[in-house]
Amino acid sequence: MKKIMSVMLAMAMAASLMSFSAVAATSGDSASQVIWSQNGVTVEMIEGNSISPKAVLFQGTYTGEYPYSVQGNCVAAEGNCVNVYIDNTDGNGDLYPVFNLYGTEVSSSQFMLEQGKDFTYRITRQDMGDIEGPLIVTVHSRDGHMMNFFIRARQFVYVP
Image (tube, rainbow, N blue to C red; front, side, top):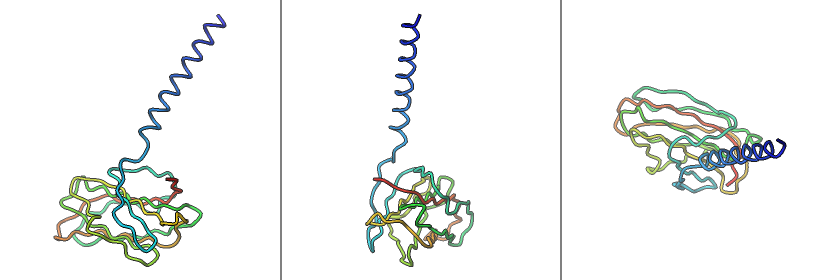
């Protein structure tokens, strides 16, 4: 009886380790692409919602024709990375986010978020130091269409 219990316990442990491995393998980032690197700041685009477990700087839904601007205050103790997730799956056209960090405007045509897509923009300092101060995100369209999107920014410790 004792031997049967030991075998069952070993099988249960193995099964739990296999399910943990599957979760760990799927919880990593999708392929990321560095799309901007200048003035000590790097921005990567990651398809979908890259989960980041720390402080929420801001979140909300916007519907309108005019540029949308939102600000969050980064605190050094909260980490060295900010993820800005924008969901344009219900959108009516392409979006163009502009990031302002440390008073420096970070923008590129490569930041374009196509209609029907959602992306996470991962912002880190090139020296991997903590991010502190205001982060302003302005989202606009280039053609004046009615925008409809969800946005959320979180700050956390990123370990590459």
